[in-house]
Image 1 (tube, protein in one colour):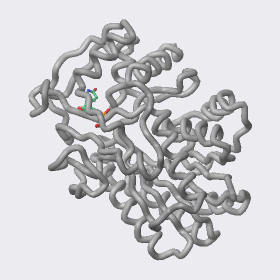
Image 2 (image 1 turned 180 degrees about the horizontal axis):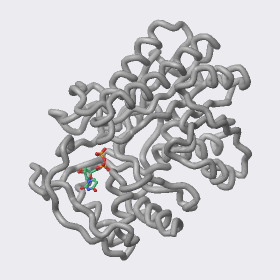
Image 3 (image 1 turned 60 degrees about the vertical axis):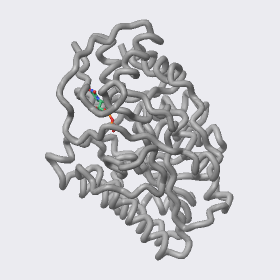
Length: 338
Ligand code: UDP
């Protein structure tokens, strides 16, 4: 069995943690990344944690010629595709940047997988595909809602492209993992989330506010139809999320897939409100996070959380990390940066 895996976007937040868990599970990892939103020294971090040398090439997956070189040079049978832009707001103001990057990079990978007869691909999808779901928690059968941003649309389109390619290509198997809200950092504080500029996501904004880098956190909306008026989300620890990729890959490389294309929700199934999360962060880390209530943020759904039963049963994967440990790891990581 070929246990070498190409990880595109492997120096990003999710990619780097996944690389660590893959290596810990006995996979050999080849990382490609264009470093558009990450740093080369992340590779050193992965090597320090695992004690293993990692192959890294600075390659843009949109550059099919460069990507072809990777397929020529390395003997891998599986790909995990993370490389994508992910800022929802930016995607609204620069839609073509998102369509061009997120679609072309993925199509390049699929095209070369077909040409080089590579079998397995895991795609980073998102709970954003469910939009404002009518019934909660969402299962994989919950209908997708029309995307509310070009970013969200690229996730839906890539899922469809993957489904169609898996149906058309005899040897290609695909798994889309729909992530809920990934947070936290590696417990060693060697890896974590490194947003450039002002963070869009909640937890990096919380940690930067606690560290005094930001004056105050704005909680977007306290008039939602939820228990405390703030949005409900399903916060999944980054190491748990990383392990879900290993579980998906194991299923593929063990030849256990029953369909050519499968989808799994990767969440805890336990909703937390924004207010609860902020208060919990303050309590477990014993640090204040100055905050105020602000108007709703455009595009936010009131509530979304997973029914992770399918992943629990079929992938044998389960979210294990305690949210308090996750919030401690996030704070430890933030402190390690200063
Ligand atoms: N949020 C907030 N203040 C911030 C950033 C986020 O109140 O500075 C809220 C946001 O409205 C949402 C939740 O935190 O309800 C999670 O937002 P995030 O951007 O982290 O992830 P999303 O759920 O949008 O993918």
